[in-house]
Length: 348
Image (tube, rainbow, N blue to C red; front, side):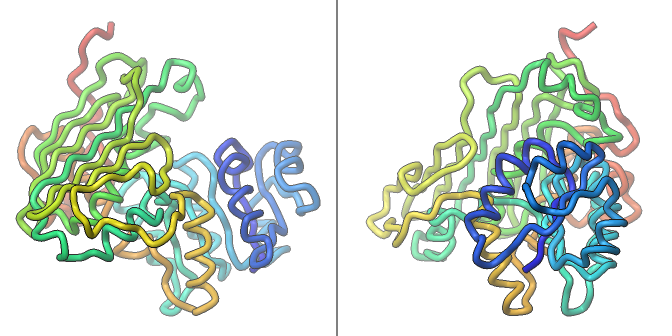
């Protein structure tokens, strides 16, 4: 498979390039595009260098385009790549809104190319084992989903960060969405959400904290907390079933040792870490079979729907039903619904 990377920044260098090297017998990086030609040239030595994605697509005809640019560029670049016949693997958040995500999905072909979103937390062997257990642990009852991270002012010094127009939202869609996606992959679709969000400390437009209560379609309930104000960082998930509790404690990735359970059935057969390399392998498998990859289509839309409902509830101060998030909702086109202003405290 011939791959191209658009965006040669930190996420490409630290996560995607090592993942591609891990599958070097199956995929080759033939080109890199970035507005900084020097940075593009140093990302993958030997790959062709471009400062324009359109020119890259016309010249190289890649099979796969990996989108690692700031969020406000994702939709246009993904549509361009899909329209050129390339599969797309896009960093999260894949889009600034459900409207953008649906526009990206509409550019897919009936049998491909496909758009897949980077949700690598879902694909470690612990998560796969939990889903494979199915109903063996009893009926799902309660989920706790916590992304308590820390991002200081230096993080937000990058011009596009912390702005509705360029990131779509704040820590909810940028950081918490990983754990939310994993939670939804286990407990299934949500039905109702009640949320609060605020800009409590950071000098940004978007939220630095959000909290939500959720009711799932299967009747289970959950609590979701996301923060960039937490000095002791942790990613935590707890799943309470009728017959067992399963917990995951980690930060940015996990292996089997990060999971615990009260059930004697808990025994993942192998130790595959959650990583870009793990998800890329599954995408390559799907490409070789000509099938839709995981974290694609409705499977990718679920987490974006969830964060959209969370923002809608936080801004309106009322419960939001999943069925309300139709194309005529103000939150379909913008995660802030055009309202823009959260409750703030301690900020001049």
